[in-house]
Structures are given as structure tokens and as C-alpha cells.
Image 1: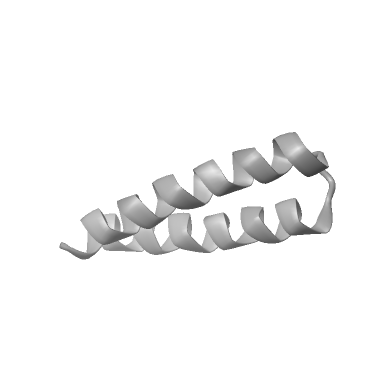
Image 2: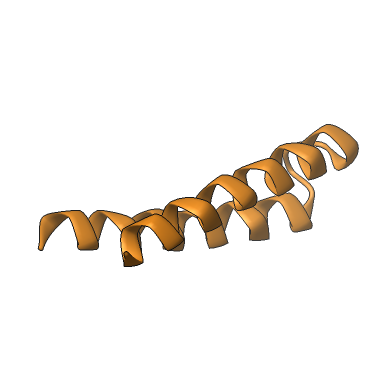
Length: 51
């Protein structure tokens, strides 16, 4: 159940990041912050799969 929630959050965060990157450019601080948040979500998801 947790993994499905995380996958939903990951999908949404990817869409937000792509939109920001298209609008602001890849090196904009909001895009970098979004990427870091996505990394955290991906790490959490990976931990659920390892258990």
C-alpha cells in the first residue's frame, strides 16, 4: 500500500519537475529543489522494495 502511494507521489513530482524545467530551465533553484525532493521519494520507494 505504501509503495502505491509513493509511486503516485513520484509520478506527480516528476510532472511538476518537468514543467518547472521547461519553464525555468534545468539549473533554476526551484527545479533543483524539486529534483532533490524526487530523489528522497525514490529512495523511500527503493527502501520499501528492499524490505
